[in-house]
Length: 627
Ligand code: ADP
Ligand code: MG
Image (cartoon, rainbow, N blue to C red; front, side, top):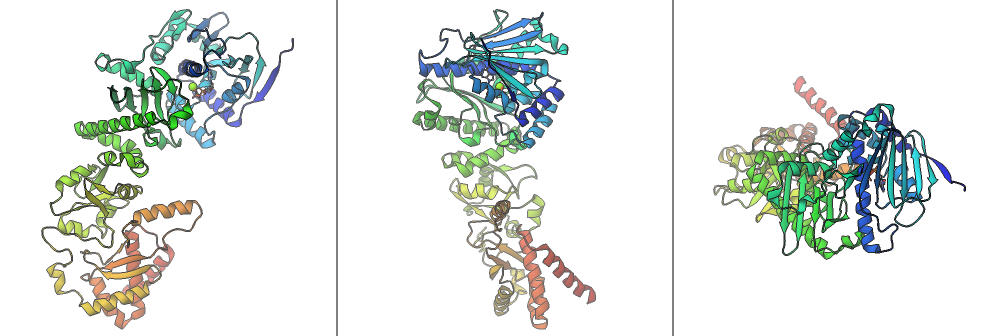
């Protein structure tokens, strides 16, 4: 009989990954046992689900679903076997020869850095199998698929290549034989393996037999009654399903019978993995039906913006044999998603009430996802609105407030909620937009992130009060019966007369024609000479900035070309002098007008041509010094 063996090179990224795994991650080698057992459990879950639809049409249908671990101290091998779904020849090649993840170089560098800090992270990246090479010189994988095709052995020493050989007579499932390195012989000791399994794999939902003896208790934690579950059990379960090292930030365990039977156990992790530069995280909640996994890392059971959650949703109402594709537009799944999402958002609201400081930490870590929710998901906007937090003119620095807090403080005659975007609290407070708010003692929210204005304009209103950006042209602030249109008395006395103002604004408009559509006399400016306002009131300067940056990234021209309105302050000395200067030295007056315009643009966070501005600035300074 000829045995067919083929040899293959690992994909380049896989080689690098193996190098990282073998050479820099040996500090906490125990995790390789966990990773292999977790793969075995996944394979069993997959088989159980497939066999529900396939009926008798499976290979070795009679085998019990279990994981067996065998230790051989003579040959120094650790063997982990499962009766799961198995792998065909091409699956062996694909699953164990390439990285499913986008195997970019940055990903690998990030991984190397993260894993150096905490090797537990390796499971987060879907590269768990390769951890076998932390302890093994040689790793053999004997596998036979449930589809009745022939079995094979995959073999590698973890350097450049692997081989695949046909191997007749295998049973269904996968057996992984780790030929232990000289310094890894401890992994044939029973107490050692047993303690690793108890620590990391206690929640595997299939029996794990170690030298013939079952060492885990198989139980679905989420189906037990809340009062019977200890905090430690929740924490251990979270660490197990979330591949996490730290405790979760929040947890929600809830059950319902009507209108839908739901058992859900959701966890908020302590860290946001997307900020580490790994790209979008995979959803972390698994969907079960009567304790049988039907959709791992489900994209359907929660909205995409809740992808940072870890946990389990189990519903008896789902048909067991539903296919993954059918889940997507299953009406029942849609209902489950709605109920669970609403319940989770309510839970966050309660958490925020009971411990504001802790919620603040949640907000700074995961707030970005809730903002994503507001801009992408109309269905939950109202619930999400209550969870948003922003700094404001009346909040302490670094201590954002809820929109509800704003409502509590606002006077009965105020009908709108105001906000203004800026790079920092200091930048906003030094700018022209908040002057009238300060004077009239009206609170204004500070939106410090570029996305914030999109979030608030999507939200539109909160509890019936419109959300309005303070750089709107038609903004009218009234408080204490004061008419916003009437300037204060002191300003009235020495402001420019109507005709002078009319001709000044007309003249400025001509000078600034290239970027300004209109120059008007401001009703709101207190100290600053001028400010830029957004004409239609829909797109704030901040939104324009974000869009322009996005266009630049794609090689498109920026958006700054849209013409703006400029308001001038008739009581400001500079503006008054400018009216005089016009008659004595029109050319120099025009220079000053352009400089005022550029300054106002900068305060609006919009781009100006820095070279032209600096040159002009020097010309103006030159005149000042010469005078
Ligand atoms: P992940 O488990 O995150 O997908 P791994 O590196 O642990 O990443 O495993 C890679 C892939 O190899 C798995 O997705 C699975 O398809 C396959 N695999 C690994 N172990 C087994 C097993 N015991 N049975 C069947 N397939 C397996
Ligand atoms: Mg794995």
